Length: 115
Length: 109
Figure 1 (tube, rainbow over the protein chains, first blue to last red):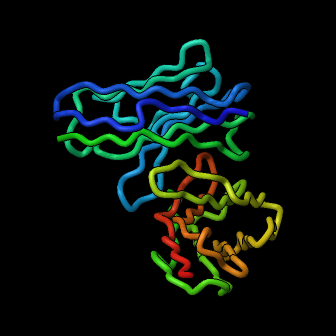
Figure 2 (tube, rainbow over the protein chains, first blue to last red; figure 1 turned 180 degrees about the vertical axis):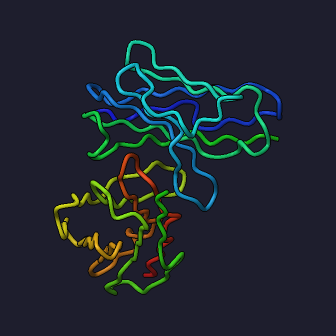
Figure 3 (cartoon, rainbow over the protein chains, first blue to last red; figure 1 turned 45 degrees about the vertical axis):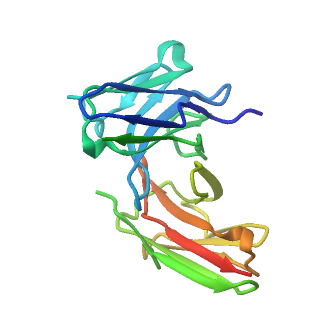
């Protein structure tokens, strides 16, 4: 079974530039999560989708961040414009059932460096 | 707001030693407590998930316990090996997963 796929694995951009991350969850997983992990910290939830609906985006900085999950499968997370403080690892995860009380499967992450 | 704390922040032990990693959480209204492993440059791998009604879970050389009333969980690793070297994260699930900062473990051969 293929795991959660993320691309790109690494991205270096200059501040004020836009950037996008892509995630393909495990087949059949209805719930998809985006997390941000700063250096030396645990991941923090940015947004949770159940199918194509964003059910928890309270931690998403909506002035510059946006996300979508068309057709309830793949998802894209965008930052525009990027700031120096956005440098972090962006992790995507998925789980089978809604409600999120079961194991989440994580992708390898996208490491973003904003110069 | 849930807060999760892990102690110690880093741990270095010789191969073969048994060890305990600690996790504490402030809000006992959780559905489950999970332990993850993270290798450098990689995502998280789930190790153990303890439902709120359970007291412990075991997988191979790993044993995790949960005491909701005291807001604590421990991960016990028996007979540690160099391949166990990684960052171990605990996470409490209330309405979302809240992670601790992790314990960086190094097992020396």
